[in-house]
Image 1 (cartoon, rainbow over the protein chains, first blue to last red):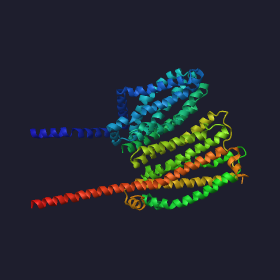
Image 2: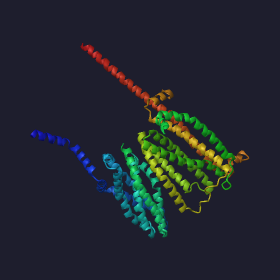
Image 3: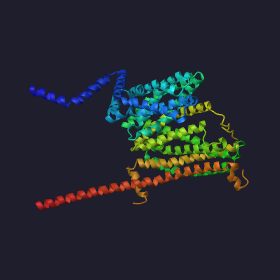
Image 4: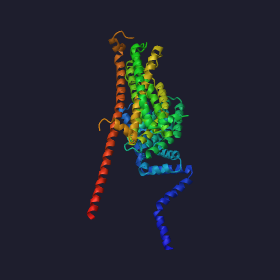
Amino acid sequence: MTIKSELTEQAETSLESSEKITMTHSQMKSLSYRDAFFLVLKRDITIALRHRDDIINPLLFFIIVVTLFPLGIGPEANTLSQIAPGIIWVAALLATLLSLDRLFKSDYNDGSLEQMLLSPHPIFLLVLAKVVAHWLITGLPLIFIAPLLAVLLHLNEQSYGALILTLLLGTPVLSLLGAVGVALTVGIKKGGVLLSLLVLPLYIPVLIFATSAIDTASIGLPYSGQLAIIAALFFGSLTLAPFAVGAALKVSTN
Amino acid sequence: MWKWLHPYANPEVSYHFTGRLLPWFSALAAILLSIGLVWALLFAPADYQQGDSFRIFYIHVPAASLSMGIYFGMAIAALCSLVWQLKLADASAAAMAPVGAVFTAIALLTGSAWGKPMWGTWWIWDARLTSELILLFLYLGVIALHSAFEDKNLAGKAAGILTLVGSINLPIIKYSVEWWNTLHQGSTVSKLGKPSMSLDMLWPFLFCFLGFAMLVAVIVCYRFRNEILARNSIRPWVRELVSARATHK
Amino acid sequence: MQFNSFSEFINMGGYGFYVWLSFGVSALLLVILLISSKADHQKIINNIAKQKQREDKLRQARELRKQQASSAQDEAEQATS
């Protein structure tokens, strides 16, 4: 009797790890798609909140880049207000690019990315959750800070609404397209510079339409056309980019 | 229906097949290009507005359209390799990328050399030149991604995904740049956009275009064969071929 | 023929520099690309040949060692008997 219980105990301890895995597997099978999505989202946000500098550094970068422009160009209010939309948007592109690296890198390094790809849930969903988390952590703070920087650059008062709206619709596109680039380069040692080469050309349409919307708003004309195009880009990338990210992650983790 | 295509999925068969095609392509390229270029430089009439600077267009236009065409070809190859797991499609995409990049660079350089006497400056943010520049970035991205991977099969897959994403984005970029250009068009841009072409200008154009297309075929064939050899270096047929051809032992 | 003399042909109605610059640079780039693509073929073949040589050498060394080991074993057996 005692021997038997001892044996089972031994078996339990030795099999503990594997049992844990099977348990989580069975749990995951019973998870609904929504649960899986929110689980990944919550996990990513929790991790990000524990590494606060990952959130703050791109923001600081955004602020510093924007403040450098008046120093380089000169403080005339007219010039600044003319180039303000372009500066804010270019800085936002660069800040997003800077923060993209951590989207998959740590998960790739500790192997949890592979576990995620092996899970029974569609990759589309999990990737989408990760990208949404990334946007909430890095894109959303940009939107809160942008009006302050717009004040520094003497942005036309009529354009503030357009600035917020374009950032609200545009930064998710940046996160989605950027995720494709990160997924392709995550397995490469020096992927950082390569990432910018891959991703920045794809950002051009967003940049063009967003700055044009802000410009149009500053003259007092309706900018709903540009906004509609950015929204189209948003929904297009929302439906297509996660597939590309999934395929790219499969290549990168091999 | 497509059974006749199947043997060409074999690297050895494709290698020898492209080898047999090469002399024909080379001859065609040489003939068409020499006729076309001589015609374009010597016999085609000068444009009534732009004079002889119009002759740059006999290179610029074929290079620009081929640069787009090669990207399209790469996208098709990438799609084939992703859908049917064809390794040869990867090899052909890898062979096309540098050729496309060079043609894009030529289109850019000739465009800017044409622009200097016409616009008075080497560079203008003209819609066509700008989208060519972005196309060059896309090509360079694909090439850089290709060379960043050690494993050529992985590199092909990754570059294929990037090519497909780029090919979806390319029309969007092109139209947004055109739209942006009309929005910001200053008074400096003269209206020397598209000249209407008479027939005696069109013929040399056709010859030049086909000649450059054949030249692309020649270079892509050479590079394709190189890619096949490099990817199949441990196969017996490659080993036999190597022992027959290697220069120093 | 659009030009009356060779110098007129070179001059290209005043656009000579730009025309010949574009044709020259294009020709140069294409020739470099063509030649390098062609030269790569021999380079790859030589690389594979070298790789093959290295593998052959390794195989020979392995066989040699095996032979030596077996001969040493034979000697040892002879010594014990």
